[in-house]
Image (cartoon, rainbow, N blue to C red; front, side, top):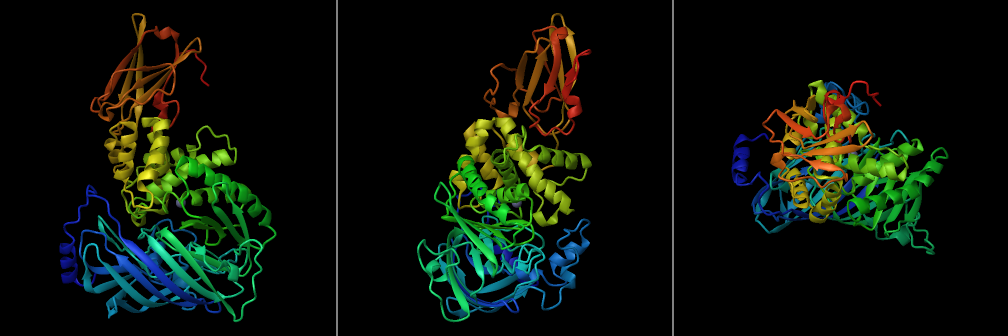
Length: 615
Ligand SMILES: [Zn+2]
């Protein structure tokens, strides 16, 4: 903000926004119509955009903000500087932005902008356009913004760009002036530094005029498929040759918060209709080395879709596209861009992850900048389970890698809480482990706390209550509370908002005149209920369950031979329970043998009787 006076009045006008998220839910709405003309010789494009914006908030808006993401790909941008100053830069970025020539850089420039016909004053500030409104937008009112813009597609560096390493001509993501989201926490005009988005829900009508040799994949449904062809046409339709050098592709995407596309003159386009009716599109380079993998990917993609339908909720859009492009894997509305020159397991793995994001981001649209663990972590959790099934991996704990990463970070002393903004973790490594691994552990461990059936029901109900919205961490944990009957605010607070760790221990096991006393200790600050598995010399087992008092609920028994003991009140550092068998009959006692509780020191979780061979 350059103008101090303005920013103070701005803050004052929004001072009433309730940051506790305990007001009734509302969300803004956008209707975009865009006409874009792409020049594939110099990768410059021009566009006009009409945006009907509906202010569903209880607030009067005096300014709006647009993202101009492509401006990040210029020497000296925040993305460039951050990449050159962070301790562990992403190797795809490194210092590459600082070395881009003017012809290779990206930009997005707004040439004119009006509000209901009145010209507006605006200023480009890095990757954000700051706009003073001609008239305030009152609660419940609409405004129509009309804009002319011009862009240049940067050489592929990160996510978007031209001429990717695998030779894909155009990966067009974060490519248009995109209105920033305004929600119960106010504006989210985050600069584009490294990652993560938060978009406004709405409908997109997009026409892309491009060299007729190019084949496109996009977020929307192609409206003029029978004119364009390239495998989009209805069965049996003979596509007529058109005059001119260009095709005008017309897409409509409804109920999305983003619109992306990719284009290449050498794409192969395959279609497959899944059992639920969703049409799956595959667009990949005509490269004999990858062709077989991309064909074999198609039935696996259907299996993944059906898995997510069952374990989260029904995929709601008519199509989903898996497109070769970008520089790794990234999720967008109704599609993903992935690199395609991979081993088959890796190709299915990246598709599983990115497709799961169709739910955990494009349907359950958390603010990724603030709650990166809710999209990356939940996606990692469900896609690991899906891979285990679809690829017959046979893993007992498909999240063991996530636990290993998280436990390493927790024990490193460098962990930052999950409330850290996605761009502002000290290192890329801290971001990665926190968002992906600890986020996956958050869900997996919740299954340990409330039981697997309650977790499964929580995911389904979370989908039912929050699809096409912007859920927060509190919204998710409230669903888990309603499903399970447990009080879980302690779990969200301590695990997601602090770096407190779980560490419980078996302190000692004592003979007590024919009975056995087991003395436990809580070493970490994180509260947890405990499953204690006791194995006797004759091979029989029982599970001792110690409820956590502040949870006010006992997990449903998952083993038939479970004994429920008294609650453990968190503040007490020790707890003792009695087994009605002599110590001599006990072979082994283990805290959490499922290993789903993220205990940072498992060495003290085990008692093994002397003379018993350890497995
Ligand atoms: Zn992801």
